[in-house]
Image 1 (cartoon, helix red, strand yellow):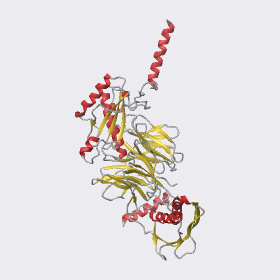
Image 2 (spheres, chains in turn brown, purple):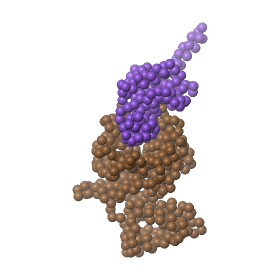
Image 3 (tube, rainbow over the protein chains, first blue to last red):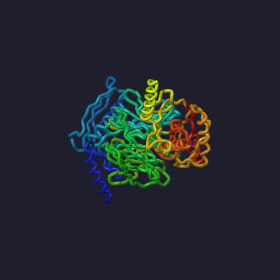
Image 4 (cartoon, rainbow over the protein chains, first blue to last red):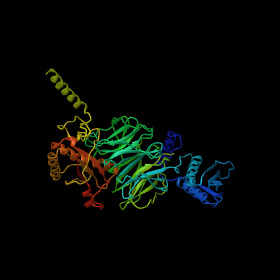
Length: 403
Length: 173
C-alpha cells in the first residue's frame, strides 16, 4: 500500500515535470483498459478499407490503453466509416464517451490506398492522444541488427514488427544502431572500412557519411536530445573512454579518464545535461552518470552482479539489463530516488532495452537457447510480446522517436 | 659556407618544430605518430600510449601466420603462457621493418555486446602494450576490436568460448 502511494506521488510528480504529453505513471499493474464499442463503425469490403480497419483496431489494443468491447458495452463508442474511393481511402471517425452525445474525437482523413496501413497508424496515435493525452507509438519504428542474410546488417521495422526492411547491405558487420532525435538519421558502428567506425545514415536521402574513424575503437554512438552532440566510446588515447563530439565541428571532449577501466554504452538524459554509461572500474560492469561537461561520475547503486545497456527514457527512468541468478533481466530505475522495478521475468536473457516514446513500452532482445528475438515489454504489466521476424538472430533494437 | 650552415640550422629547427607539432606523415607512411593520453613516451605506462589521431592507410594481409593469444573470462590480462606467442610477433616485426601489425581483439558471446566491443579492444591494447614493452614502436601496432561479433567457434559452452576469447595478429604494410 505504501509503495503504491509512493508510486502514485512519484508518478504525479513525473507528470508535473513533463507537461507536454502526459508521461506514464510507473505503476506495478495495468490500469483497467478502456473498452471501445466498434459496432457503429463500418469498414466496407474493399481491401484498403479492411486493411485500415484491422490496423486501427490492432494499434489501439497495442497502445495498451484500450480493448475491444461488445455492442452496447465499453467506455467509448466509435462511429463512422472507412471506404475506398477512386484510389484513395477516406475515413470519417467520431468517438463518444458512453452516454454522451458530444464527440470527444471527430476527424476526417484521406490518403492514397497504398498508404492505408500508415494512415491507420496516424489515426490511432491521434485517438490515443485525444482520449488519454499520451504519446501514441503506432507510427514509430524500430531499428535493429539481423543476421538473416548471413552477415550482420541493419534493418528497420514498424513498432509492431511489420514492414521489415533491410537498411544496409555492406556484407561486413553493422551493429549498435542509434536514432537521431528527429527520427531521420541513424548512427551505427560499421566495419565497412575494415575497422569499427561510426557512420551516419540519412534515412531520407539514403546517404551515408563517416562520423568518427579514429585509430582503435569508435562505437557506442548516442545523439544528444538537441541533435548537436554525439556521445561515443573511443580508444585512441590508449583505453576505451567516453567522449562527446560536436556533430557540426567534430571537436572532441573527453569525459572519463579511467586508466585500466573500460567504458561503454553511453546514453543521454532527456534534458541533455547528463549521460549514463557502463564502466567496470569497480571490477564488474555497472552504471554511472556524469555531467555532459565531465567531472566526477556517480555510480548508480543497483542490484545484480552486472548492470549494462542503459537507456534513459522520456519519463526520466533508466532502463537497463541486469545479471542475477544466471540470467539478464530488464529493470528500470529512477536515478533521483534509486527506486528499482523489475520489468521482464521470463526464462530467457532480456538485453538491450530501448524506451518507446510513450514512456510505457520497451523493446529489447530476448534470447532463449541462443536464439535472439525482439520482445516488447510493458512497465504497466501487460504480457510481453515477441516478434517473429523470420530466420536468424534479431537484436540491439532501438525505438525511434515520435514522428 | 655560411649559406650551408644557415640551411642546416634552419632544417634542424624545422625538424624540431615538426616533432613538437606531431604533424601528419606523408601518405607513404602508415600511421601518425602521436603519443596521447598521460605523459606519452615509451618509458611510461604503455597503456597510456595513444593510437594517434588519424588512422592511416593500411594494406592488411588476408592470412595470419601467428598463433592467437587467449584470455580468461572477462579478462584482458596477458597470461604467462601467451608471452612467447607475442615474442614471436615481435621477432618478426624486428626483421621486417616495413610491416606493422593489427592486433584484433575478440570476446565470447556472454555479456553485453557493447561492453564486449570495449573488452575486445582492451585485449588488443594489452597485447599492444606488451609489444611496446618489448621495444617495438607504438606506430607499428594498431588495434581493432570485433567484440563478440566474429567468433571462430560456434558452440555454446566453455570449449567454444575459450577459443573465442582471443587476440589475433594481422600483418600490414
